[in-house]
Length: 143
Image (cartoon, rainbow, N blue to C red; front, top):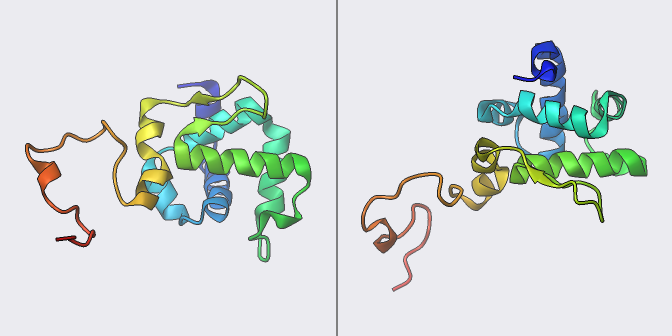
């Protein structure tokens, strides 16, 4: 565990998850259940700094702060990066920067993109023999 993990209070992680819920469209409980809130907050703090992170949380906290439309360029860029992080499990870096990276194998598997698509990340769940032959749950059969 990093120092950021050790020093993070539940309230700070909760505020980060609440803001992330506003950015991603998923509920705070759903995001918390993924178990990535503390890790993602530590990544954001390391990449963007505590001051920018606190400014974003302040800007998007409270009633009437649901939209990121009122954010300045710097905070809007951070909001997009956080959204990208939750959906893909990777930090996007800055445009033209080679600083993008996948946080961990767990973050890849927890990416919201897989939930949005109604599936699981490839290679993260074993499939039973012949599972490919049946119609996926929730899909219509085309015959």
